[in-house]
Length: 458
Image (cartoon, rainbow, N blue to C red; front, side):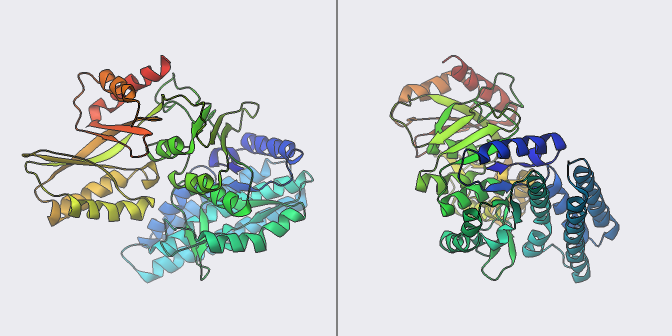
């Protein structure tokens, strides 16, 4: 079971976590918990790394002091004994002081940028703090919880910031370090988001990587199911922050969910589905505040699942156009390299060409972070490769469903709803589970809303 930052960041959320674990502990032979950093902590740690690189000691010290105060306040309001509180506070201070030492080393090096391996040493502190708090809460309630740093479990390559796990070595580490704990009736509380290289240097799995941690552990430990606990009722037909009409999707296939995650569903990490699909491990997405609800079940495509449009997303994209029929291979390579560094994903390209013009759009996954589009525009505009191309932000609106490649009425329903909206490019995913249209940013919200109306009418 994976619990996100909104679940572990407040006493009300932690009370729900405890209640769920106490209940499910009676129903399952073994539980493995994965926890994220408290909401907003990772962003604060990234900022601390940048301030250290700018030699702003006051700035990064202020962030550390704020984080310490926040975590101590959370501990103070939890029903913990005095001994447990004292031990937890000492652990917290040790982790933060170690992080301060790393920040000081960055300041002393006077580098123009923070080395990715150093940044990973700083940002992984958030998950380590959260895991210790949750484990202490379990112990106080007569459960044998122990915080486990995923640096001892998940072995990755050296792509700091977006590391790729070595599943073979990871499985060996889990058999050696995690399985014995389960056999002794201990509940491991594992840090999400982080791993380590073969030499033991901390790495991270990319933004939102705690989901990925859960699926890696599940596949390596032969789990029966994975549950992602979040603050919404499940995977939704559209972004609930943008539409009050968003509804829970009761069930999805692995392929549909992977497309939904890539094209904008912020609840799940895009890379988390593959390990589960390979071993046919079901995934449930549920609301930590409404545990009585079943949420969304993700599994192999059932024969009874009817072809339908199940969800719609709208995310940012980078649109590039030129008044010639120009090759896009070098441009794709430039964008692909930049996007992989920040999101761990290859650039997904939607291309449209004629004898007189070329247009290409690159999808920017949510795991790339809020500044990815701006950074990408700067990279593209400064490159001589793109001197004849115009670059701008666009919206990529994607209908998620099944059998778009066979049931063409689904495509026609989408296009009919977009009557009057200029379409810059159109692409059907090779899995048959997605249909994406690229439009100017001012039409993105309208296009998504119209497609969502098709879903609501079913």
